[in-house]
Amino acid sequence: MVEPLLAILGVMLREFARLTKQVLDIVRNEEVCRRLKSEPGVGPITALAFRATIDRPERFGSSQAVGTHLGLTPARYQSGESDIQGKVSRCGDELARTALYEPPHTLLVRSKKWSSLRAWGMNIARRRGMARPGSRSPANWPSFCIACGPTRPSSAWGRSLFTWPRELR
Image 1: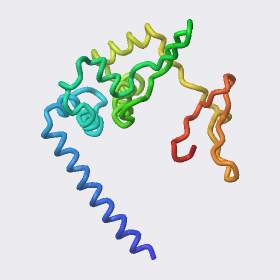
Image 2 (image 1 turned 120 degrees about the horizontal axis):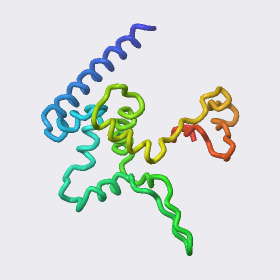
Image 3 (image 1 turned 90 degrees about the horizontal axis):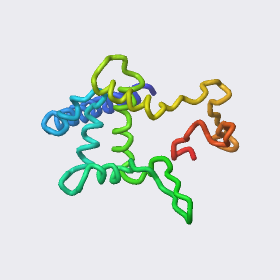
Image 4 (image 1 turned 180 degrees about the vertical axis):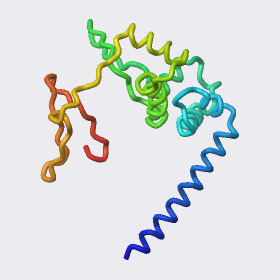
């Protein structure tokens, strides 16, 4: 009974290796991807996601238009006298936005190696007030109830500390 499962696993691993080699070959042949990979934290998937999203850069009038296309502009609520500028709008390509978020986060939070790019980012983070992580106590961990589905821990402000994937919502 285990032999067919092992055969399937072997085929999947071979296909995964073949696809990985294809991705690496594409990145190696693309000049833009090679330049992007020279930055700390940027790998082949991030470089390809950015290259695929911004396929023809001449269609954007400015760099701000690229941010808008990716959903990296603040959402605004305007009504009468109120003008509230909120979090990122999240309109646009989710894969590219996520891929572009990971390298700077890795560079600022996880990397201990000094670089001029990291120093620049840390200075901006200090000026703007770097966000503090949420509580890591087990009381704030998410749970799952078979009868009612995912249950979210509540914080003092009534907001969730954990965001569930779309498949589980």
